[in-house]
Image (spheres, rainbow over the protein chains, first blue to last red):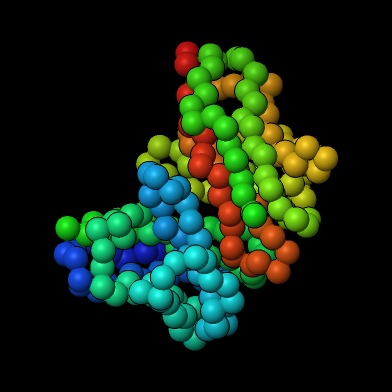
Length: 112
Length: 110
């Protein structure tokens, strides 16, 4: 099976812009989670989707949003980008909500 | 507060030496504990989870609820064990919401 695929791998944006990141989970996996990784804060949970519904949300502002489609693919959107949003954004999928997570390679977002 | 603490940022040992990566957690309840590993230029991947009670690549971890710890151990380190190790916690009814520690970089010298 193909692994978790995240696109694009790299993004450069300027402050105030918005960005959409995409994640294709492993075939058959219904749960998709998103994490932000930075050198200072480490890995922080953003949100989790299962069967097209957001089931859990981390402590991030409303500028961060996401959705999941019927084929389990997921997107996350960040509006009104700030410099502090520069990070590696990781997507992970699992068969069900409490199984082990399989991570993608991430999207490196740089906000200038 | 839910928290995972890995006190060592960097742990450097020689090949063949024992390794212990420390992990302490704070959680009011019965969480599930994991160790994830990231080798150079590879994805973050699960190493082991406490409910499985497995030994993966020679590593073991025992959940100590009294000390709220989940230390990762290996009796004889190998150079290929050099990687970033993350301890993580999953609360009940918190599917997909892993709480990670800051990570410990393990460096095994020849």
